[in-house]
Length: 225
Image 1 (cartoon, rainbow, N blue to C red):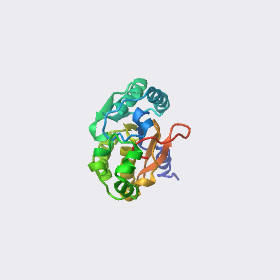
Image 2: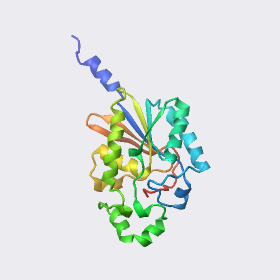
Image 3: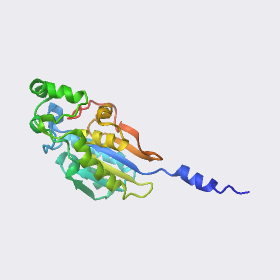
Image 4: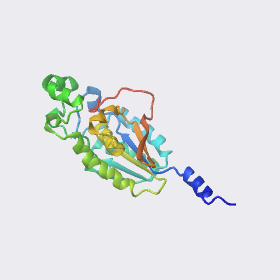
């Protein structure tokens, strides 16, 4: 007697499902100065470019099917390194930019705490705050997550999408795709420069497989600390 579900079950067990790799850009001068970058268009340092080149070689081993990126230079240049290694053309989206943070942008961490201490404290408590008069975190997720999902929907059943973006945008996007309440998005730690997180497609939706992967532990320098 044959098992009608045996072969199909074995195939299903081997099926990897789609993956989304969310990769943060390399180091910038403002990262080193602990300045809030937001949507300000800041270039990579030489170290940041070297980080991108190293990470690109590692990510190429995942055989990505598509690469999408923020159009801000720090993300676009990072993505270009993976595009050069894989031969895949990078698609850029303004919706994948970092959170716009109004008057916070360009200020150091200490300056933000000194000038906008109550607002900063409310944000760290998980309250919905327009930092510097800018975007809410939920608004960032509203614009970024649909772009990621739209490109993921184009993948083959076992395909891999690489999304090159920014620490805050990646965190809010992961929170949205995992179905977490916005108040709990802060529980996802920040990404170090040129590190990445991996979401895998499961029976109940997306799940977090890796977080802040790609290097030995380094400080998280950026807007999402």
